[in-house]
Length: 407
Image 1 (tube, rainbow, N blue to C red):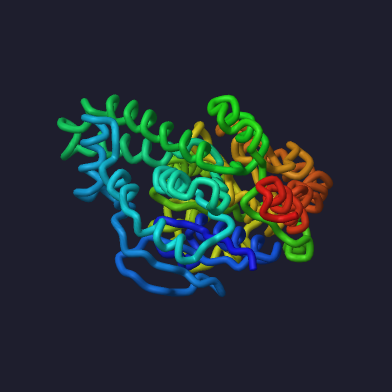
Image 2: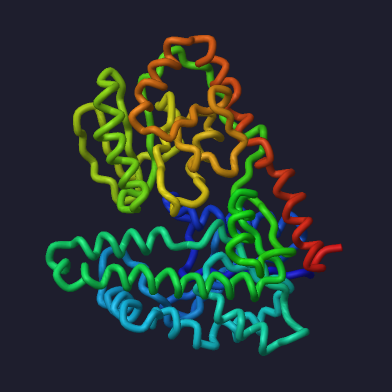
């Protein structure tokens, strides 16, 4: 029996709002389909066994960085040490623990999969300890994961009660965080026998910035779908309701929501806009309805006619929500960066527009061309070419053969 270990920094429970857990579900399913026995290894506040779907989850009590929302004392300590000395104490403390390595040694996996740089030092020690007799390591990442923390730093520095102290440190925080995260990212690639990223765009970018990824990098999208699972819908003749899904407090989403509130919805007063996600308040402002996650994304997609993705900036990574929109057979209007990794063509199966001020006009123009509106709705699914289950099986099989785990 060939065995795979998937490592995460908190216990997985498949929360509907957690994109990471959906990705782990996909990875576990794909490895199982290829003949692996899969177990999850997660950092926890207790030693325990639990279930993630049908997979055994080994919860390991060990120190971990604080990932709670807001600015707790551990997070403040991390930021302070970053500014002063250029490292995160919580990550360093976690990395020195042997408990994850000991748990892996008991399981004896053939493959270890990580998706977070914080495990780079742990697996470097695992690799050095076992030398030639060890599991193969696969690292998975879309890009240098800096966006969220930089957003936290900006928010924290601009908080009134802390501005006088933190704002002068913001430059050092950003510079030191980038340097520290880059170090961990480089090591994450170094420890890997195969490095996987989400798409060819990020693959080229990573190889250019991290030459140690050359020769062992692959592009595999983190989601896939069966053709039969793509929602079949009768084309609409008018766009009445537009939907944006995304966590309310996440920096790039906050910008996108502001664009909708200030620059898109006011120009389309005859249309209803729904903004829904984790942390979103339940309120209404003009023609915008804000909703939490009490109503499922699938139900919201059923009552919507079009989806929005006005995401800008370099730190937004691959957009899994686009996958959900397209799988639901809804036309999406979004920026070029929103469609990285997708087979999207402007005016054929999507509306691609970087100028937020043109969104309202592009939507009105599409409504004035009923034949094009109907055609685009019929073609939405073509933006998912390359992201079907059979594609994922072939892609993962190629990687596992490369590291000599499968023949």
